[in-house]
Amino acid sequence: MLNKKNIFSEEIELSEIVLKKTNQAFETIKQEDIGYMKKTNINGKKLFKTQIAVIASVFILVISSISAVAAIHHYWGRGMKGNIQASDVQQQVLTKNNIAKVYTDESDSLSLSVTESGITIKPDTVVVDDRFAYMSFIISGYDVEDRMEPGFEMVNVYQGDNPENGAVNMSGSMFNGIIPDENGIPVYEDGTSIENYEDGNIIYHYTDSNGNMEYIIQASIVGENDSFLGKTLHVNFKNLGILSKAGFTSVIDGNWNFEITLSDVSSDRNIKIEQKVEGTDFTIEDINISPISMKVHYSVNTNTIGNKDNLFIPKVEGVVLKDGTRIPYLTDGGGAGYTDSSKSNAYQITGYDRVIDVDEVAELIVSTSYENETIMIPISK
Image (tube, rainbow, N blue to C red; front, side, top):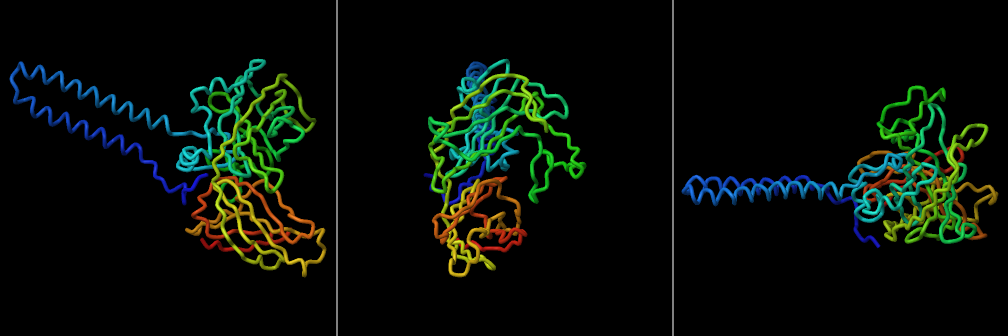
């Protein structure tokens, strides 16, 4: 269980540490040089060997330190940006705290790949909390024609050993190079706008500079009290080809199957709210919130509601940060429902399209109707 108050409080300053050690080492050389000029030739030759050893140790120190930095600097795949966006610092902290895992950092990463019919698929990045798992897989060896949408005939995700009893909520697609900005407007992954987005004539970027593609998956729990922590997810890909309005056209037949063991580290925090959602019969009692998802608990005033069968459960759609930054289209996926037949309690489970710092959340942006009317619910922590 992760007990840190703020998992994003750590500063990533390893390069400064390397620089400090390097400067200290070169200062030692400088001092040795001063002493060297005062020695005789015989002693000077002996000292020169010492100098070489010191210089060599400096270079070993620098190279080793840089290697250490490189070894612990985790790069999430480009596909994960299409799943859930994160700053570089957020990527490092979540990975360090075992909330995220970059499989390409593992020494046995090659053994995790599956090759069939000339196509290699391997897990790249997995980010998980109690409720949601975001996964990306790299696909090598497949060339897709321009303006064609690559895809699989079937992608099956389940937990446990039985696909019939281990169902999860799941959505997946090939990453097409497009991500939402802070206002939910689609842009290319480098941040440039899509000028022809309105007319639908969009050029998608499925492959990276190496010709690889990435398949992205968002999975969430089915039961409101379920948990992904420490569970094993089976991810099975079947037949690679082209998707179109007419359906799926198989190009390469094959099965690529994986077992992904999810982290057992919880990043969840429970926050008491106890705020009525004005204009509704709902009160937000508390929330369980993490950097990548949220569960909202409601109580319902059943004495005043009308048609219980058509009751709209309010939904948290975004947040406002303490510095005033609004993220109105944060939430993505999940579901809502009632916890009992009397409909006196309800819940919402939702993922995000980007990582957030829980400590910086000041307000919830809550949609109260089908017309998308919103109100602000403050968080007191």
